[in-house]
Length: 498
Image 1 (cartoon, helix red, strand yellow):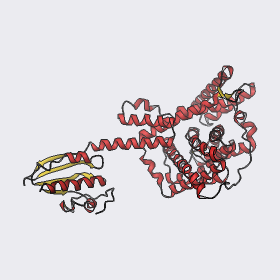
Image 2 (image 1 turned 90 degrees about the horizontal axis):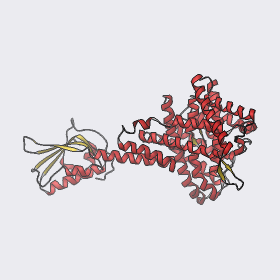
Image 3 (image 1 turned 90 degrees about the vertical axis):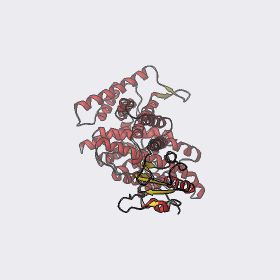
């Protein structure tokens, strides 16, 4: 229990500047981000599919919200978050979370590396301050040197503490020691309070003040769909990552339901919504948090900060929190990808780099979708090259084509090139014993082949096709030879009208 509570406290301290920063990105009040971090974090910690995973307001969602807030106001954002949550609940009910298994490992590595880079770049904003004109400029001189020194000290303390003891989370030790040094010696360092005040009351129930019309629905629906997709993709990928780190299993559909419920509630309590946070989840895991108590305590500590602890929390130097996040970047980045990039197929290496780049340039959802599509196309291309035929003349003088490899949309051209209807003998046998018809395109090319041999006045026999193929074939139906004992049984991914 001590480890879980201390881990939760560490996560809560790291959540404060992140929630405030993402609220600024979305163009809303800092408390809107803090309430989202509290409500989403609490509900997903209690009901989510991965104990120990941390959720809250995230930058991936904030960058989508900013245009909605700018055009229509914060009330439309709350309505959007409610609808976003409903869509995520539906995804959980229909068990759509299982499709996360379609994400290949190179995409996962690209996601992890890209997100580590995004976390790193997000911290660079703490190296800027507003000048006399209100423009953000980089720190210079003594302020910059003190910032770098405190960050380095925090990272050194975290590294050293992790080597000495596991009794107290190393990030918490780093934050406390550096904070005490800054306060005790009165060092000139920017603090959490320099970003914004985090003091506030309890979140209150509030129905979004928007017209309940179809026009409103058409405004918020596109944003809700995008936010729901980004939230679920990031949450499920983080779930898989934490599961690998802790050697445990998580429930994808349960996580979808929890994320949906959390966002629906958050929208009614003045929060900006959220999803799983890989940085805070890594802090929790590395600090020893493995159970629901760590996530629950993180959310409750955050609420305590808002209600009672703002004066203390606002004195924490930003350098200490940046140092913690830099250690998260080091722990999150898959450094092994540099070692294996020359050993894995070039297509996988390309996907890994592509997903990392798109994650940094655009957003996580687009990066994952692009990675999956490219991986699928590469697989289809490689599968298309695997189909071939072993040809022989049997004792009856018939020409037999023994097909090897899958027959699907990518391989139909290669399949057609295997045959020579004009020059083949009058009796031809095509044996699919070592092949499999995968989709409608495969069925169509078999029908087309039957038509060519029929037009040439030659007899075609099709062997070892499944009953599903027989049912779906049209012109070649009467050419199929049925063997109850030898014919395979499998379903074909097609809806082909007879």
